[in-house]
Length: 254
Image (spheres, rainbow, N blue to C red):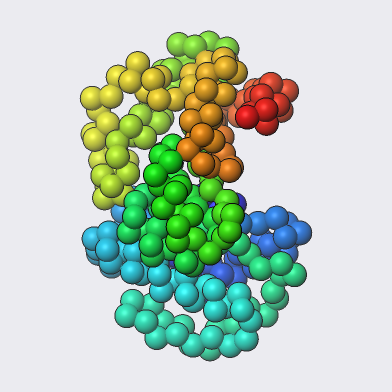
């Protein structure tokens, strides 16, 4: 699953649709296309300007319409306010249609994208958000995928310092983060976050119980899937070993 890609600025939705169809074929129908309205950090580089959230969401609506039409098969022409397609076609379609997921944060995004996607993507364990998605979603029942960052390490202090260095930006509301154009801006906006502040929101260390406690909040809020994100590239191997042997068996009990 992509978690999530923006098909509205750097990447044209017709190209994203082709990539998704190919991945679905290669993965033997195990792929989910997760989409979002983008963030300035990644998208502003094409120098088309960075519009407000309403425009970004309107662009995403058009992009999803294009992608869905291409998944239907046949030749697609589309003339939207923001995006256009001329005689596009996916020549190799998978046996199983690629499920669409969309990142949402409130009522407006649930109303816009629930009718267009079967999978909700979120980052906050808010039962009111999952309930709103269920109200509008075409998926009955729908999958709801959340992200849980983890800084796994036998050394709790090292895990905390690493999470503070690499992931403290996650303490800032995404409505702010989506507007930041550079790593320097992320660094500045999170400069007041302390290591203990980060450790209060991200499990740091090798306590399986802390991971289970954090995960339970999402499941209790109505999420069906959880993406575990290890903070720090050098610790991936030890994390995957722990996930296989210790973490996942406990999470499945939830």
